[in-house]
Length: 365
Image (cartoon, rainbow, N blue to C red; front, side):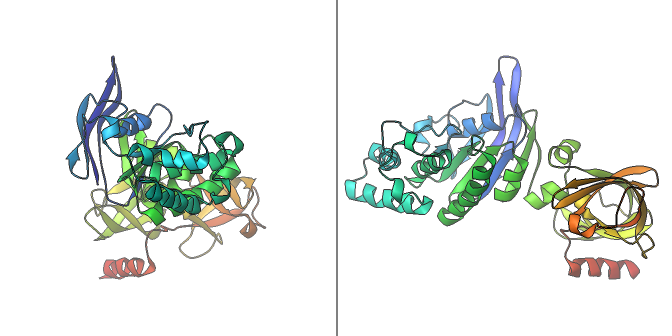
């Protein structure tokens, strides 16, 4: 659906985007995730035709649109600021792009009614934007962007102007609407939780470049760079040894690793999973499970601090002189206090039990 090759954008002497490449499949929801100044909005604006690239190529459905004006790209776009016409009603705002495209009145009325029903705003059809809440205005903006059946929908920080509770509700609605319509979608956000919840794939960006592209599960549990690891949540660096590996796909394998004498099966890049090699494993705090300190196969640790965070409690523990973060359900930690000794097990949530058993059996042979 969308192919971006070696895209670059320079403002005077500043390279806002450098050598950016990405392919988005039809019906996919891809998020550009990164901090302010990472280049994600500039990429989106170049795809929309609102900025001209300094270098590179953009194709939509096989057509080269790199130099095509924005109005000829037939793309739907939703802005952070909604950008609704204040003098038009909800119904008229949604109908506007259809009138511009010279749809007949009957067809316009049917499409507007369909979209109002999709976003749950039938009862607000004749309201002005000023009479709506922020969440309702964003749903109108989304409906207007979808009205003419665009092949590609671009979302520029669509929820960042809303309060936390409304954002949470709208995330669910947005995901449902995208799945229902099947429209290929690219979203820009700096909100890690938003990206993880909504996306089929995430492109993590920093300094105008892509740090990593992958599924939410892989980007979170297998960050490929220090930036990707630290930008999304907390991370531990564990020194491990590779004992054996079994291929999973072209890029990944299930590796049998050893950490402090504790063996575990971990999904890794095939390039890194070299038998006999030592490696630094990036591990999320919740991938360390708590056990009895003397449990067979568990790594012994001493609790240095306990921080209650509601459903989750975060422990800072000492393992052979290394400081490690562990997250666990608060309800399971009634008897764990500062100074307690515990056992830790390393668990990769991405590895199925059948794969884990296969690797362990293969290693014995």
